[in-house]
Length: 378
Image 1 (cartoon, rainbow, N blue to C red):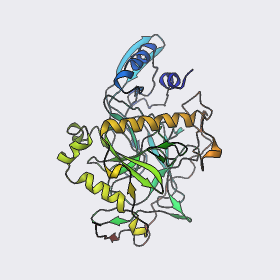
Image 2 (image 1 turned 45 degrees about the vertical axis):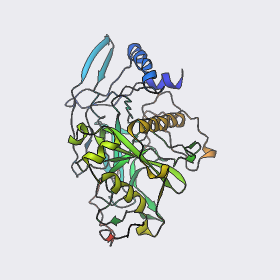
Image 3 (image 1 turned 45 degrees about the horizontal axis):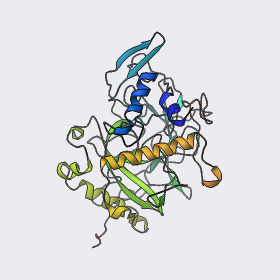
Image 4 (image 1 turned 180 degrees about the vertical axis):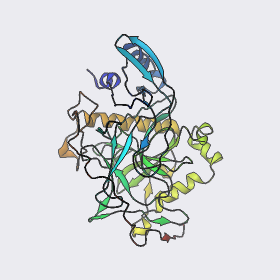
């Protein structure tokens, strides 16, 4: 079976509580498969994957997170096969905190309502829709917060943890007039910036594709949202290509007013300039050089960005199918998953126990709330 056929026909199953809408069991039949293939000429030879999901994310942590439900349309394709499609909803994921936030003991696991751990990296469907320009997004860092949370790529279950260096957890500094991260920040699941292949003459950074969500709500760590893709900015970080994809939650009021990167210049004047400046300068407070950009710092539009997302999704498929040599990659990501049954990393459940219940948050290090000031360079 080809890679394309495998990923088109695969079945993703997540347990759902009886009180929730039934919506994450999907059987893609031959009709929908052929329909997807027929759209290739309309999408620059990219495969349009059906996104078939249930309710939007909820959280088991003490912090509040928004949740929503989309109505599902159900069609009977055979006595034993039901196709349930919810094209405007993200998958149900319960963000389950372990340990003490703002310390090295903290971990945020994606779980089902039954408590089964799933991978933020591999088990949550990207759900890329090249026509609607939508995909599913995992929030790692809420807007205006400082803790540098990220999906842990090389551990079973791929929880969200706080990045650390020299034994200390890391916080981003406040660049005046901003506090912490300028947007809700996170990643597209089932994407990977391949560090072994050059794209635009630069190697990838070995991580899922980074995403900036610009909507009105302050999200929570572990939230999964359906977002509209507007454009992207190509950051060069330590000589590696590090895309920043600009999106908006499809349920945000802004989503109906913007369809491409240039729409933001009219509807949100200053946002793109401030975003670029923040990414350029955010390391200065740590006495590091300012960041550089590819393409002369120009934003890519929505269609160009869709090709980038599709390319990183294809790279991820090569990774989970075991086609990447660990000897070529420093810290190759773990490919263990609970949904992709025909991949070498498939397991029925992760060998991880949720036995370290969430504790009260630790205090921020002294100076975390300080603002830093820098003169713009000509």
